[in-house]
Length: 585
Image (tube, rainbow, N blue to C red; front, side):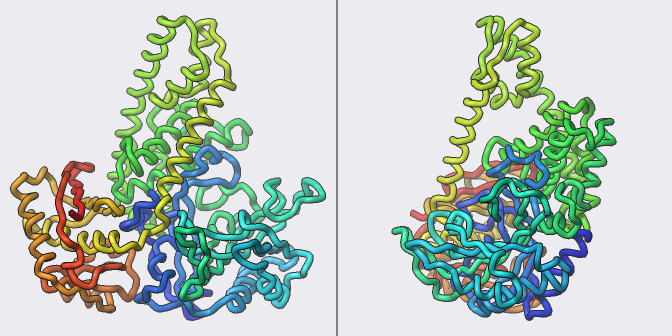
């Protein structure tokens, strides 16, 4: 089965069950400081999972592009990817376990024709926070899964969320496929990482909210949240457990074979070719969002992916620039499903070529640094090799070769120890990034969310209507707002923008919301610059007569609740884009 066929079958199945399809959200979380990228289909839906009405109703489904960076070092095996597609369906306080489990079983066995005897199920075993999920196990038995194929696992395996320290969460039930491989031992069962069982779908019964105090309180509405990885499901349907031989990735591998003159079937080429294919596919999608390589946040992740792919390309003998050629193949495969990558193909290739050129210069600097250090110390240890890798992207293997030429042996264990310490530091940083919980809906961030509308309108009033929002990020301490503009605004213009916003706040303008079609909202004068992420019905927020904008919320009920704002920084954030920082004072 092809990816297109799977996508269509899933969406059509749930549309027939009364669901409305919502478009894939941007990979960049809207006004969410807790994560760099969208990593699950439910992330854009947090306000609605917490009870805010969705303009399309209580039954939703989607194909969501996702990106996860926590396991970049794991990429290179047959199934890990940083970028992936997630199919999902949601009930926002509507149907519950019985319907979802019956539909899951029907979709797998009747639509996808997977034999029931190849499916295994896991359920939550229970703990002090929530009881054993006997109900779910009973419902699986009712639809046709034999009892001996149902396993109860603890919270680390069968509980979803919260994404941060607080937020929506609940027990889940996961579906596994028996690949036919031999068991690794008598205790082998789903969740074992030996490769016999492959997880492909997860139904989450989101019924709790974890509080700051660590308590699990019932949500005011029970929600269903599911996630089916497209690549994982295709592996099952095609009985092919190398994701890189599926139609969403295989043409990319073939392009890498063509460029390198090497064969993927040679075992030593599989890992580097998988890394190149995965990292450049992810890079294409990040670049399509308007992110460019940099040394901070999303731009840093992008730079790391591009440079890592280049290093592995060099490792299989690619000597000429190649990233834009591979990107072209990604666009061919994904461009019809995600038009944004096709529309920005030229700029994507330009950025990749530019970064590839910069990296070649960086490698030259790394070589000079190696020679300078060695000439001074007459030795080179594993920690020094890691410094070259981290600071200059200098491959460890190349450092070893250079050191060997100088008669010096580098301790690989020392290098690994330095790498592990760095990875642990990165994970700690990621945990801190999530410290506030996914999509913080506090009173302060709600104020800032409203300020983004005032700021957007004020920018257009002072700088002209060519200005439009290019991104935003909110924390409890400040607002960051990206917008299109070709030059640096003057100090006088920044002051005018700030005064105009505060004038609207002091006027105590009412904030109203109406649900309508996107076309109706635009006809009423609403700003809507991210049309690809909107569904058939949208929410239009009006702030007095000053601002009208399509948005998901949340917002204050009147502007005086905000207080007063101060713009404290303005800077460039890419070609033709500026960035403003403001805070409530």
